[in-house]
Amino acid sequence: MSRDFDECVKRKRIVAQDFTIALIPAELDAARKDLEWAQHSLVERNEKWATIQAYYAIFHAARALLFAKGYREKSHFCLKAAIQTLPECRRPPRGEAVVSCVVRMAGLEPATF
Image (cartoon, rainbow, N blue to C red):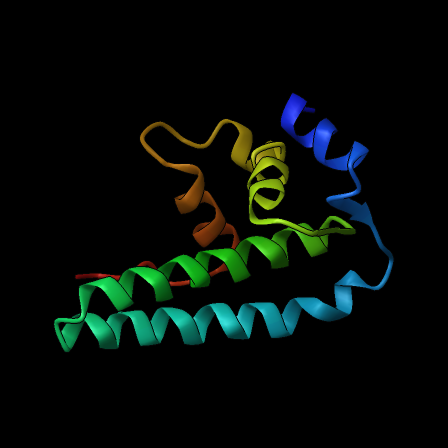
């Protein structure tokens, strides 16, 4: 694990929970909706709002991935630290950022702008 992840666990910013599987569908639905709204905002030339919506699409997708591993986060920083420890995202394919890894693993369609 990473030092950031270990510190988040120590500070109880990442906790193991057994009910997280039931939360996954709602998180993926929120991610899809935020991504759709981000695309709509770009069409409307509202780039700042599109950026915020895209961020939250990634946030919700990352939470779904973390829930699938039986954990729940209590901060955005610790969510990132946890996702970076997943074997699937620790060493993403060449040229793929951790964000792209989250989008791919969550089954979201990448935006085409």
